[in-house]
Image (tube, rainbow over all chains, first blue to last red; front, side):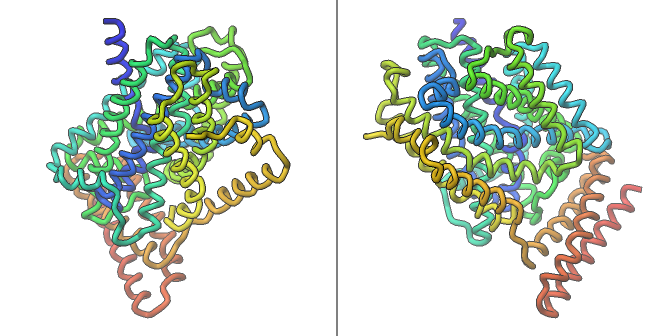
Length: 405
Length: 122
């Protein structure tokens, strides 16, 4: 019974925590410019994320150790520095974007410029990390994040053509603006498969004390939770396609996005959009801050746990303190949150190979995985993601340039 | 399926300096290219028209009291900012007289929407 409750909680957490600044921004931009046509990128990103989460969750449950820890131990500190830097840079940029998302939500609600909110947001986030436990950080914010179901309600109210949405889940070539189309596809993939997501998930498995008894919980949480979460992200794209595309509206500012929900749902939709943006971005802010601290602490072998008192894991606590305070600076200085989001999603996509390829190797190492190493199906899945990751690495920057990002 | 060994993988990063220099060069080019997104006449007129359409929708929603005054004002400010930015860009990218006339029309439409929304928010 306890396990079923944990399973339900895991699925709900994955769903409530799926939307964040990147998935909202890229989904809305994709829908506004190409209607339902980029639905396939969201589907592909969701499937890839589910596979990567299942793998990192299994790695943690079987070995009792984190991905970063194993990476450093098995491949050496000099190799470890490459993925460390490649994950820290985009994760930090995504963190800045998330703080920007919260700040913009507050700006839209109050009229006070977003830059004034950056430091208070960082302080509240830090306080939550300092005083809270892992379950409060993860489950609390994700539960509140279920408010994002409002996108589903809005889409149902607009009576979309479901067959056309289904057709968008199959990749197709655009009639015009090819570079922009592929740039947005890369951005959507970058938002869906951000490395911090599966590294955080893996650390969370250890925080929750997962063992091999949790392998089914892991499989279902990663699969079903992400499926529902990806469905919600698809609703963002669909809503934008219905409201913006017929009017030829391109999205250059977060303020425009509020109209996606205000148009079908009126004042209530507008308010719920602000609440959704605030909660989902705030949830992602604390999660990414923790993910960065986990990565450094696990990689360098420091004591770490969000469930420990900060005095017991001082270097870990210092790391998240420094990370969140540094991340609020660009927003406090007035950096454009949407531009930052677009850049960080592309860099996120480009950084994938250095975490995905070593994961494929570790998942086949029987010294680590014992009898739970990857089968042929798992290898094909992870191998395909690794190929996709290399393609994204090569194409991300040229597409950003050509696609007018 | 034969998979790369740990030694193969680590060799790339722990190996000769040339490897690391190559990786650094790719990263530098990637980051440098990020700084300069493509702009042309078509994309800039599209962007200006998009702001005109945004303001039209914002005016409708403001009339229905679906959005608050703060957001309407912020959209207005963004559109004014976008128009100021697009005007010199369109002048630069418009190559023929017909393009210049069309660009003027697009900018005028946006200006008209700005005025209408300003009136609506007073």
